[in-house]
Image (cartoon, rainbow, N blue to C red; front, side, top):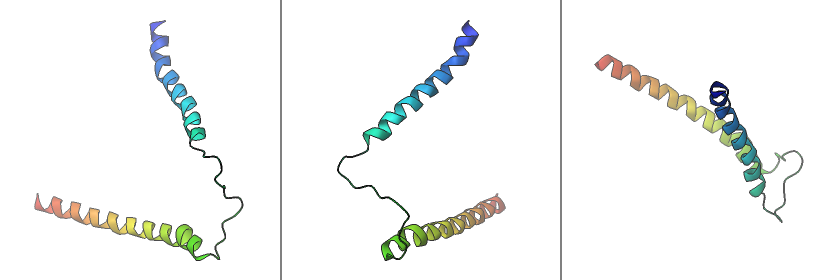
Length: 80
């Protein structure tokens, strides 16, 4: 019985947390604010920047950052 209880504790805790997260998500919905429906209109400049250009810049920046981190690590390894 004790082994079963030790086995169920993490599963019960996880289930409880997932159950409560649904209430948190619902609580954040504000009444009276329009919700977007349908596809994004990319002919609008602001949508183009937000949904296309910024994600591309973030991905490119990530690759440059990762390359710089590898270079720093190699320099540290050479010094040691």
